[in-house]
Image (cartoon, rainbow, N blue to C red; front, side):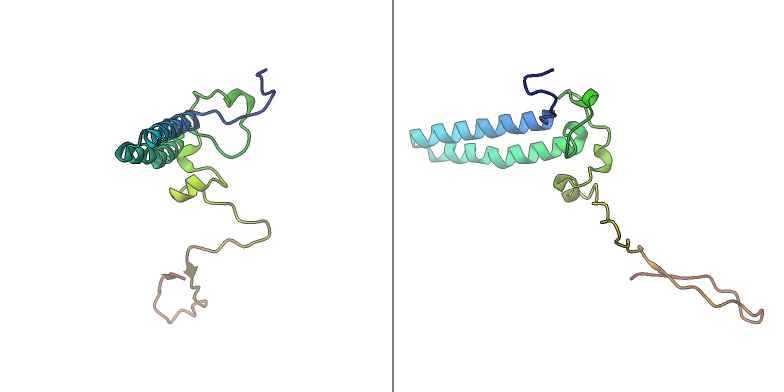
Length: 136
């Protein structure tokens, strides 16, 4: 058992990498601010969006985790997430990448991708036509 008890604290390669880049960016920006160096200050501040982008890309590559706790056997920070390719439900990062769309709320109908027109039964004298799909 760890010092945190039986909790999944979310330690992942993506989380650690993004955190270290953000801390480095703040340290560089803070030192540059104290020294009065504008160029280095902006370089340090540029590490912050780079940290967020790196964390997101590593999460999409499988080095992050889904929302919520992981099973006890999958909590090691060095394990890749096998479900990341398809996206995690309720994950903003996956939705921004076009993965892991939210499941519909219970009781709500799922819209069909297209509408199919069904023809009336044939009497035998009309020519045969296939059903057509139209976008809705």
